[in-house]
Image (cartoon, rainbow, N blue to C red; front, side, top):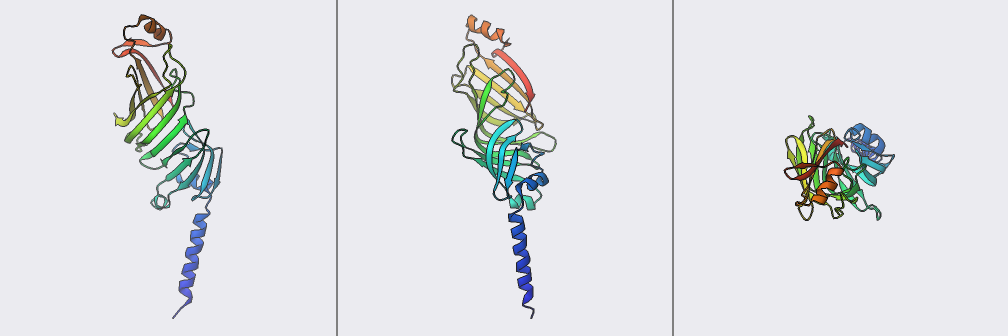
Length: 238
């Protein structure tokens, strides 16, 4: 009876577990395709089980410094699933999952981050996610979208105070992810849609309620009269 064989197998398994447990997060991100999914960071530290992404970004959205770990089950299946979380007193909490394979995108995201550059002429300052899931297939079409988002517009538009934000649900429509947002009064509405490549379109409509002074102020900054009030349409890329 060979008593050495179980010990050899056990030692090999232990060595493999130690190798996986200490595998650098920096190398794992590049190998897994997470960078192709839009995740970037100034510095990556730690292992795949307990890493840190310093000054991380998801496309144009700054995430700050987040703790991160890769799902071993997803990796064994050839997929990428990165759980991230931020606990920052200044920036607030933020957590979710990044999926780097088909369908790629994010899921179960909750928390707040800033909107770098806003939405063109629409001065959006921050975006708040509430259980948000947005995923795209290999062709760039929306495969799943759920949860809610809230956009905060801190700069006044023609004297309007929109600091309480506009919010609405996420859905897939026409192959794009879309959210139809409204202010608390319902007088201001913003429809935002985007595809898997990050190209977005936004339509901001404000009901002036037959106020000629407000209509003139909106026209002066590029709004056009339309069926839903005065409308400003912008587009760009995250």
